[in-house]
Length: 150
Image (cartoon, rainbow, N blue to C red; front, side, top):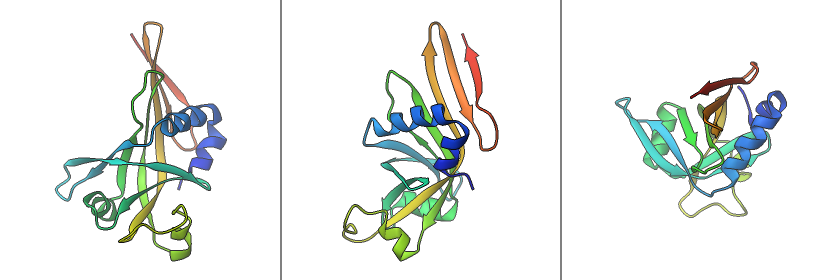
């Protein structure tokens, strides 16, 4: 399992830039898989708790049901002029009551909630430098790869 902390250790500069993109806006786009395998996109908020990138859902929301059935997902940070950030991996539900309490900001939302942490499989930052599109890709245990397109 790759945590956000591992990403920071292995590719600190890229991790800092991707995190800044996520922290620049409150809401982002979460892509999950429906029961039939087709994609579903939903709004989500992310947080950086301890070593993890985490996110939540209202109790029994369709995105939570998707993730409980198949944890594969991707989160696209709210777009901005200074870079397009995405992360992908496996959502792992936090079910231990004590651990789950750490995912609230003081009190549990009415009606309950689902908390997930991301087992990070890749992080991507895409931007424009001069007349090139520059894509930086990190995967656990590997150096950052850079691709350039004109």
